[in-house]
Length: 104
Image 1 (cartoon, rainbow, N blue to C red):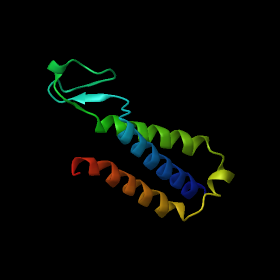
Image 2: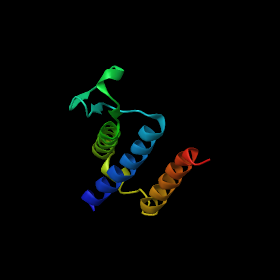
Image 3: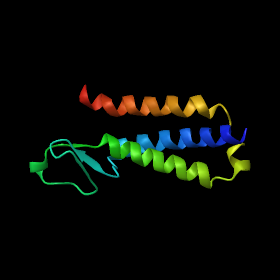
């Protein structure tokens, strides 16, 4: 049960962090395809458009790992199993609502 609670904590936290990073455009770093390099600061227009997905994923992994390690085991074990499906469903709904701006 010890590993299960930590994985559930990681999954829930990473999902929430990814959705927030995506929604608010918080990227730890950007990848510029034209240069083939990662940068922590935005580059000039001549570098081409940045790919932010890697930074969003990095933020999610970092947040999930930190909370899964820092949260005491007894608290992690008390997270209701219903959250395993409820939070991802809510996050998918939030992402769909955010993306509706392209179609309305």
